[in-house]
Image (cartoon, rainbow, N blue to C red):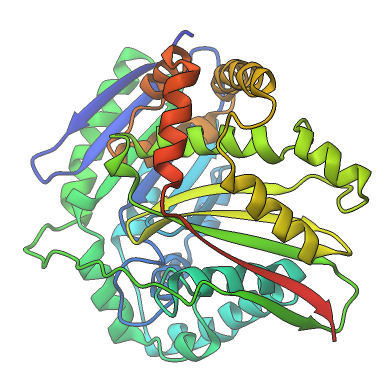
Length: 412
């Protein structure tokens, strides 16, 4: 696999920048990622997400309009351990970078604009809560991680949203939006002169907008939920269900969190995907018709797996999944497992190659990897070199002492 050329620069403040060179692309992508997300320590749940919304507000109005005037798109997202602000356009590289730094580096919080944002985020949360899948996800996260920030929705709760004010927002900003907790990424076709200009401009802007001061080291407490199997009464006709699997620390098994995530996803696909003998049996017994949604996540507050599906006899499917996961990988059709593992290795390589042509995906992945000190391309190489015996051992150790809970909708 031919890796793109990546140039990196670290400034005296601790701020880091990287340029991913993609010759022949007209579009340019720019982003700033912050090492602070919804599950990190904060005064009230949802503060990181609220902060993401309010940084777009400036004294002269919504800064999104300035990006639009340059023909560029701008957006942001908050995840468990990070917040990212990004834009993409064809021209005006320097102006877009300047606007991006102004977005993250010039907070403008007033009593009025904070109060105006509360009903907007309440409405966003209510929209999610109307979805059947939200009730399942919320139940699983609470069962795994209790009432911790990780166990609560990224947006927080209606009660916590109403507790947020200008003072709390400013305190969260000043604590977490530090140059040594932020990375800049650019992706596209840049000339030698443009590369020098971007690194020089980033150095100037991070010094202009960001200040580094002493800060307390964040304390992460492990919170464990009840880890029960629960039923959620529903007025609708949905037969959705989900399982949450709380995992031990990946670092005790593998140095790379990303590689651990990939290995577990391959294992789950081999056991439970539409290609597996298990799924064929579920179809024959008329318990499942559509594939399960499988996701593996790692955070500073805990690692976990979520599985979602739809079945009119969800209790039987949940039991069947637990039984299948309890079996060693090679119990049953060992030839299938080995062949599937080799197939998935090729698929991950193909997926990595395809991602090279998606600038936004490539840049976001690179930015997230930079925060976690990961190297996506090294991990793909390690996966390609891994044999089935190593894979089997890693999976066994990653799943050791895992705890499973479930949630399912029942007609009320």
